[in-house]
Image 1: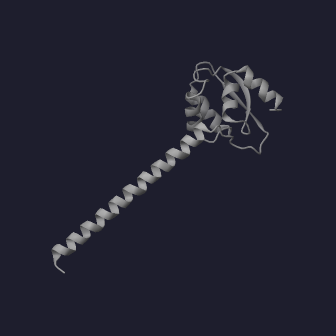
Image 2: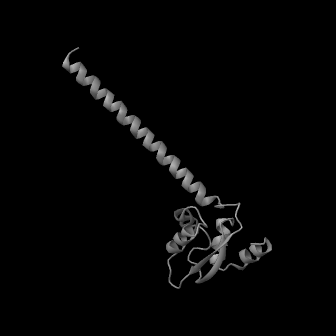
Image 3: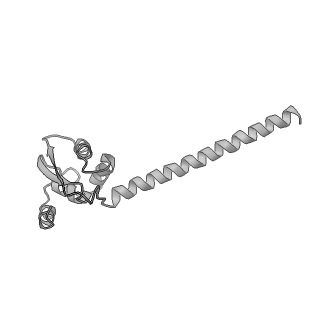
Length: 131
């Protein structure tokens, strides 16, 4: 084989490897996007097997993102980014009120957000459910 042929084969091999890596990367991005959006828009429950309530305190002027990070730290939600996206696409956007709240990882995300927004419909429903 000549050097020119070997060089051409090497270039072709790297080209194929590059395009395979691009395809794998695109598949990963779509998979990540699907999983993230599914979690954000499916009203997930973090841990349905627990009845343990956590105390979450929301301060005056505290940002929504900070509140969602607190929920993740208290192990009430799995991922604060998912909760933050859900909040921004819900009727509770900008409605979180300062106060002390009792929430559980067994509550659906909409119920948690409704509790933090002091939505009377959600509070009545969750108290009837025994939460």
